Every structure is written in C-alpha cells, then in structure tokens.
Image (cartoon, rainbow, N blue to C red):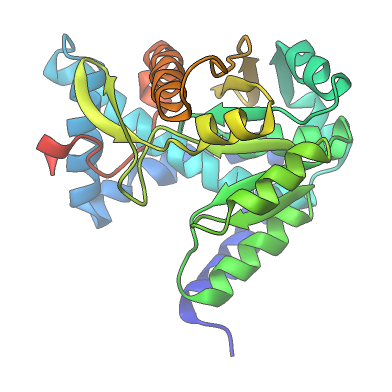
Length: 290
C-alpha cells in the first residue's frame, strides 16, 4: 500500500494537471507563497540565507525576496509534477537556452559535461528539454527521500522525461563516471552541502562548505564543469550555461579539487545574486546560522 506522502504527491499531480497550462505558473507561485504559514521555520531559514546574499537589502526588500523564493519553490514543484504530461513541443516552447554550444563541444570531444547548478528557478525543465527535445541523455544525483516509495516514484517520474537518477551517497561516483563516458549530461546541485563534510569555501563573503563531488568527478573523468542556472522568466524558463571550468591537472588532486570548487562556487554565487528571489535553499546554509 502506498505511503501517505506518496498518495498526497499522486493527488497533487492529478490536481496540477487539471489547471490550464497558462495558469500553472501563477497558481503554483501563489500556493508556494503560503508555505511559511504551515512551516514558519522554513521562512526563517530562507530569510537568514538571503541576508547573506543581499546584505544591503532593506527589511521590505528582504521580505519580498523571501516571498518570491517560496513562490519559485512552489512553481518548481508544479513543473516537476506536470513535465511528464507535456509534449516535447510544449517543453521546447517554454524554454530558451544560452551557451548550449558548451554542452555540444564537450559531447563532440567524447565526454558528457557536468552541469553544476544552484537551487534557483526550475532546473528540471532544462533536464526535460535536454532529454526530450535535444535527445541528449541526462543523469542527475538526487537526495534519497523517505519513505522509499516516494523516492522510487520520483525516480520513475524523472525517467519519463529523460533523466536517469543516481541516489546521493558514497556509491554515486561509479555510475556518474560511466554516464560521463557514455556522453550523458550529468546534473549536480552544488550550493548546499547535504551530506556534510564538503569542501570549505567562501560563499557570499562567509565560510561554509559545499559539495566537492563535481570537481572531483571532473578531475577523475577529464570532463568539464559548466556552471548553469535556469531562471523563471514569466511563464517560461531561461537557461544560461556558463563557460567551462577545468581542474588544473598540474596540481595535486586535493589542491585541484579545492581550487576548482572555490572557482565554481564563485560562479554559482553570481548566478544566484542575479535573481536572489528565485533561490530556494530553505535550510540555513552557513554554520553560524544553525
């Protein structure tokens, strides 16, 4: 028997697909804005993070960014749930990409690139576009959710629009290296250290840790890192793929990973700062905020 969380997700999927497509962004945004009414602690977490991103923001500006962040979070989930029901033509019409040549250059050289993203806007739309429109296989690492049937349901959902899922954990490296060699685009979110024990970096002027996995994978596979973001722009999505970043092979591995991770984090910082209201990391992201 399906768990209660899974039944709620299934019901949400049915409901969101009943909403006319043109209304989904606004409806999902309005629902997302109300999340703090149910979980006030999440509002505190996002607000504390955004104070680091926008230290000069007035209280009213910060409140606006927080509200927009939850609205974007709601829209992210709505898009995730409805993407399997959208045709490739609809996905293509709702998506614009800048820097796509960086992806093709890497694949033409014989390896899949690593697209490294922050929790901004709707990265799932980009993965669906790559998988169903560009016909490029995509592999993504995701946090293992509980209960188990929820994780499996999401894995099947994402597989339906072209994403192969690898659970976050110590066993992820081998399938990711294989995916890179097979020409898959590998998508990694790298602005939050979920497992702990990541690489220390300076992020918005303060020390924290972020995953070192992207830099380590690039160093081991020989592929490139592409700092990437997917912004919501009206009812559509706009993807910006940044210039390739390569670990310095002349350095010891640990030093190369550390320096590459800092470079990558600085690029993600710029992408977040361009649209801070679309960043939805809801847990405190710096040690002194916990």
